[in-house]
Image 1 (cartoon, rainbow, N blue to C red):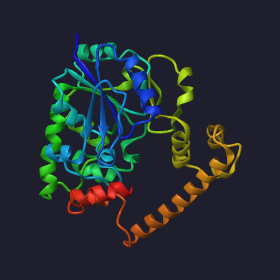
Image 2: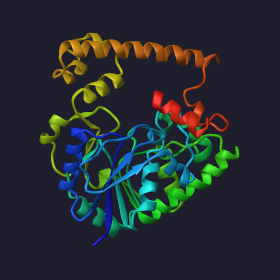
Image 3: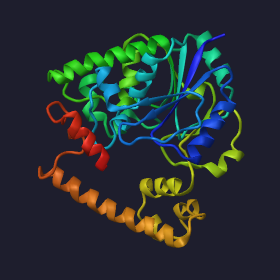
Image 4: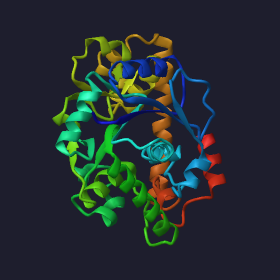
Length: 329
């Protein structure tokens, strides 16, 4: 039997995350389920997890992981960082199933991991659906990974022991290069993970080879209430509930026309939200986009910093500055 850990990753705790953890445990088989809790921004209250690992900024520094992000949380930008803290603290496992709080699986994880072991797979992740050239971070990563780079989502991902060790080592090595100015841009997790594993001779496989991925992407979200209708054998992401679901739907809706068209798919997704709350969300999002447009126009003419500047060599603040910025974000 393959020995594996399941790392349930979150930065907060409420009734929704408790339900998500319970769903995960129902599919965990013989896996050791461990909540991995990001406390780099706020302290998280007591959880319902059978085991847990809490991660603060000092834990990242101790592992020589650079405190780099473009905006917001350091772990938002480097979603792989918690994996390495858990990897170092836990007893050795053959595989590590890493799953974000907003992802769901409706298959037997033990059978999945056994299948990966038989196939000699080192990484199970999800290649983005569009061309890497259309990825917003493409230009910044060309120097590190070339024109035909890989770009994967790892919201639900599985790593072999040797893959985890390689990635940690490469983050540490690249951290020294970045600090010395030899690496100009700190790689985002979506490019870093698959390219470093491919370059290291590891075997990569898509989630789609092991289950249904028709409801797996970065957006749109699935309402938690719809999970009961989902078929077995699937990977689902993102799954959200209540106002968290509503905010995500509004925040990422590409069409402003949908805001004012009550017959739009956007309003259909928000049908459970009271009208006054829905209108408030739409007004707030419109103002956010107007501000964002202004900032980007100013950046284009050199009057504001570029949105990715804080991941460039020489533009990264001290850990104290990063922490203060994160708290304010």
